[in-house]
Amino acid sequence: MDKIRYEDLLTIQEDMYKEKIPDEVLELFKHNSPPNHYRFLYLFVKKYQPEVIVELGTHWGISASAMAKGNPKATVHTIDIQKYDKHFNNDSNIKEYLGSSIDVDIVKQIPNQIELLFSDSGHSYELTVDEYWDYLPKMKDGGVIFFDDIFSAEGTKIFWDNLDVEKIVLYDVHLEFGFGAVIVRK
Ligand SMILES: C[S@@+](CC[C@H](N)C(=O)[O-])C[C@H]1O[C@@H](n2cnc3c(N)ncnc32)[C@H](O)[C@@H]1O
Image (spheres, rainbow, N blue to C red):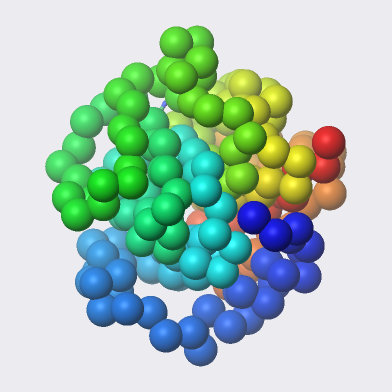
């Protein structure tokens, strides 16, 4: 994956609705609203082609599928503590893990050199902090972490507000829910 700067993320955000998105991807977005963050995740992966992608919180698999469709050569490792009906029946590049994102056995199975981490699980303060410290050592230098719901979930908001690293909020990506980004520098 090419070196990413915060300006690049702002550019993707700005152009989010100018870019052409294939119909099968647009179809996926209809399962939830507002879908801007799915669009953003898809466009980010399509543009930068990360190959090691990890998602904390699969739920219906919409974001997992959006990222998987952005780069068919990537593997999207997605973890959820519960099993739901999924929307990614066609994506052979998704690997599912059933259990807690901070379970030692699960963390051990997740590869190192993560290029994209999408943090979108339980949203309690404690869980978000533990996830951050469990997965940070597994990140590649220059890798990107996206945090969802940094305004709408109290725990994630406290985590985000106290996160003492260079970071940006992508205000148009998930509107009132809040979407933040950190580029990891090692
Ligand atoms: C907001 S949903 C994920 C949505 C999904 N990323 C998307 O955008 O399509 C949050 C998910 O996190 C899961 N979750 C909660 N606590 C978790 C934990 N400790 N480990 C893994 N997943 C967890 C929930 O079961 C739920 O499915």
